[in-house]
Amino acid sequence: MKATRLYIWPILVLLSLFFFGKVEAQENKNQVSIKESYHSIWEDNVWIWVDANHAEIECTSYQGDSILIEIEITSSHIEKSIAANDLKKMKVVSEKIGSKHYYRNYIELKRDEEKPVSSIQVFYHIKVPEQTRVSIQNYFGDIKVQDFQNELRITSNYSPINIHKFSGKLSVESTFGDINANSLNGKIKIKSNRSNVAIDDLSGELHMDSKIAEVSIDNLKEISELKINATKSKLFLNLSKPKQYSYELDLEKTKLTIPESIPLEFTKNEKDIIKAHYNMKESMPRLQVELSIGVLTIKTNK
Image (cartoon, rainbow, N blue to C red; front, side, top):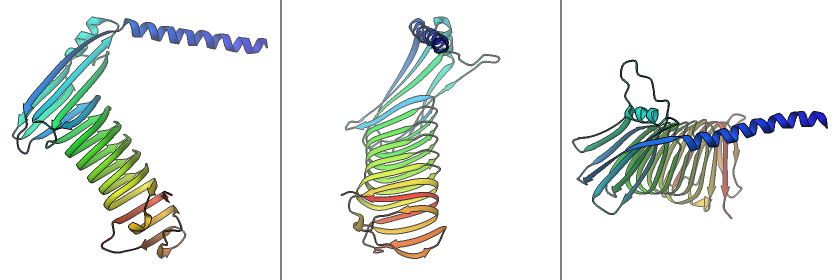
């Protein structure tokens, strides 16, 4: 019993120091911020291009004719003077070249000037008319898209992506940033590199390239084509009406699980290679999977 008390007390002391020290540090932090707001009227063929770093980005579209962009940067530090000085190193640029509107944030350092030591947060709030096309690039941040129509391009590095209610043309390329989406309708293209993908409620057309990821697609509706090319990945497809699709599978070193209601015709079924198809009719929506090293599981909703 004595030995037990000797171990518990040091842990309690360390936890207390950590907790109270953390609370005190949070209470003593000073925060300063700058906010830039941009407003313009929509024009034909306009593009919004965002090149962000360490930013939290929210994007939506609405029935209107005004493009509204708000960029806010906050700097937090125990010493307010340091927070303020670090904030001066943060730059925001807005420029218009032809039909393209560019927005970006970056750190600007003078010679021999040190990088910011404060806690820096960058926020983009993007609200555009439904007929607006948007391109977003973000490093080490977060991207949220909701109720968006028309064309959207996303390039993400170390930034998770969440999309809710999208209709139009979507292109997503993500490295080390998981993709979660629901209610997608349109022409969708996704390139995932070490980024898991979860899609619920899909209509239209989906082309996906996946590398070292876990991909789940649930609740397929009216689709014309679903094509997946993957390497070292786990794919999970949940179908409500499995016989309404044509299937073409090209698998290498892959564990395949498929319901009996889909009677595949195998053109090759060897130890490491599976080639199979079913219901190959031009009038049927196409489901094509090429997977090298991984797992393919197809289930049906009952």
